[in-house]
Every structure is written in structure tokens, then in C-alpha cells.
Image 1 (cartoon, rainbow, N blue to C red):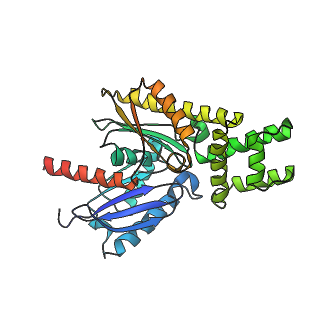
Image 2 (image 1 turned 135 degrees about the vertical axis):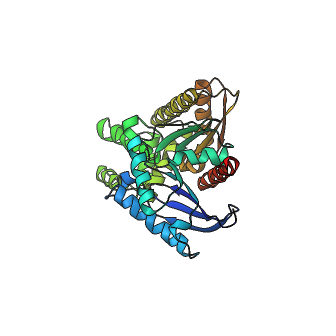
Image 3 (image 1 turned 180 degrees about the vertical axis):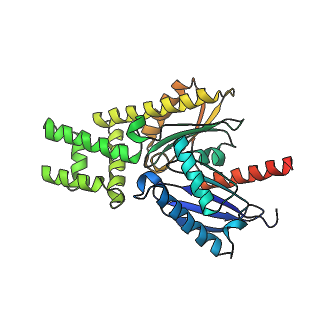
Length: 320
């Protein structure tokens, strides 16, 4: 459609990417906004709506457009985890002025971007999320509720459990391991007080992202050295992955011999080493009877929203 305009959004707990697409689905404008996850915002859904409204207005203003000029929108947003969340976010988008849209958890976007529209995406970034889409477009989500759903493997989880392992070894048992020594060196700790002070950095990853990254890097380094505590954490993480991926597969009833499973999020695509990825693949293949075709993400999630928009437009033209 020559005069159509489309909006693709990938919204996270830290930043949000917006793409304005022309009638040929080419990116005409892009911008980055802030957090849209209501769980992380002091004003909840009101702050989510405010952030979306401001960023969308800025994006459209660059082309002299108004909200009514948008033909269709696909938005994958962090924090859309329940029916209540779905109702609230749809109300936010209608209040902004969008009339035609599809909104879902951001974990579904990589399936569209990487798996030709169907398959499973297992995300480990700040948190954990497992999303699947069937060839019939049924959508299933598992995990993504932090400690409430027993998630294991996100950056926040790694930092908490890494510190716990160090604390228990040193403070409770007076033991020194590869992990405790490496932790003290990484964070410049010379005393128990220094270790406690390092916790203040890990508790606030927004203000001190370098500390959270250091904890994740340290975990994978300790795993490479076969540290006992790191191995225990890795087993818990890969068990969580295998359980969630296999349950999404079962619920969607995939009949195919091979099922695409894309690994997304910074833990998988930036931090993880071969030792961990091999262990993850072994656990997942065992849980799925060898049916998983596992690969790392190579595209930005917002590309999934763009593909989704193209499919929706094609379907609308076909039914017209």
C-alpha cells in the first residue's frame, strides 16, 4: 500500500526500539526509547503509556505524521505476561490512538524474525522467557515471571546466585574456591566488608550495569574451570531451559521432525561460552528426543515485528 505507514516495536525492560515502515515495509525512521515494562516503572501502566506515547510521537513527528496515519502496529513488549497485562496494554495502545494493532510479549518476536514464523525462542537476558508459535499461529509462553515461575538463567538470577555461592563459601564455611578467589579479584575485595559492599552494586544493575556484566562473565569463567558451584548453577539453568522448551513444544503439538529453537538474549548471544552452550544443547535434546534444531539469534527482535506486519498486510489483502 503506497500511502500506508506501519509501526514495529520491540519493548524491553531497559530500552525500546521503534521502527516506522513505509508502504513497502522499508524502515523510514528509527528511534530508541526507554523501559516500557510496567513491572519496572514506578507508575506502572500509566508510565508505560506515557513512554510509548512520547516515543511514537517523536518518531512520527520526524515525517510530519499523526497517530491516525498508522495503518497497523505490531508490538512485542516485556511485561505482557497474563490476560490482565494483555487487557491493560491494549487499553494503553487504544488510548494513544492506535486502532489496528497486535501486541504480545516481546519473547515472541524472535520466532517471527529467526524461525520463518514458527518455532520456539528461549530468551536469557535480564530475565528468562520461553515463547513458541505453531504453524497455525497458536502462541504459548512459559517462564518469564522471575522467582514466581522458578526461572533460572537470566543475568539478574546469575548475579544473585553467584553472590550467594560466594557468601556461603566464605562467610558460612570459611572455604576458598576458584569462584570465591576470582570474585574477590574481579570486585577488588580484600575483606568481608568489601564483599558486602560489592553487593550494593549488584543490587542496582540499572545504575551499575558493569557489575552485573562482571558477575555473568565471572560465572562462565568459573564454569570453564569446572568450579563446583558454577557447575551446580549451570545444571539448574539448563534444566530450566530444557523443561520450558519441551513443555512449549508439547503444548503446541509440533508434528515436524525438527523444531527450530532460537537462543536469544545477551546471556546466550554475548556471554555464554562453548562449555555452557554444549551443556544446554545436551539437556534440551534429551528433553525433546533429539528434535530440537538449536541456533543463536542473528537478527534484531524488532525484525520479527516487521515480518509480522508484512504477513498481516498480506492476509488483509488476500481477504479483501
